[in-house]
Length: 270
Image (cartoon, rainbow, N blue to C red; front, side, top):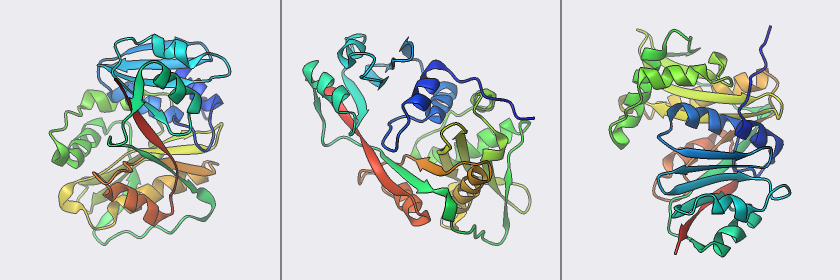
């Protein structure tokens, strides 16, 4: 018997406000709650959420229920904020509060894919795909660290992986790894499915450097997308960098069939 996940207030708000150009998916909050750094958060029940991490502000706002200016005023020490390019009311409130858009900043591109006509999974010889089990937190944390340490030393710990697995939206069926024939995990895709909206998010995706360029990221991504579809989902989502500073992940997702639908914008206080 399946258990209905008990979502947090911002996750429920993200679910209610979901649309094709939405900034947040409930899975974003699951991953970030388990892995993020120190932050201060505030919730306006069923109206808004804000998080101040250092001097950076993230928000989720329903402008029909609360003035975005009130939410932004909650964080007078914020020097930067991220919104979606479609969040016009929030962007206007940021400008009125003394922010301006930084057109030279890094940005993220939200990509979607319909799940009814996915490509087949082609796996290179010498590898196999499988779902993770909950007693594999140590090995799962290790492959994450190895996949991400070429960008700087990763501190992803067993404790953080255990926290990820404790999130109510976590489902091992959507945590797929590619492993070698001798059982070494070398590539991963973690998916978060919101069964009410039918939308599954991929976050994060990684591959150990010495096993790249073998199609393993594509294979694990497609395996999770197929698992979403088999669970009744209709749409997949992933949010790679969209600027030219880190273009490779976006190219991979578009080669699978993802299409860009919206992008983030960074605002800085002036």
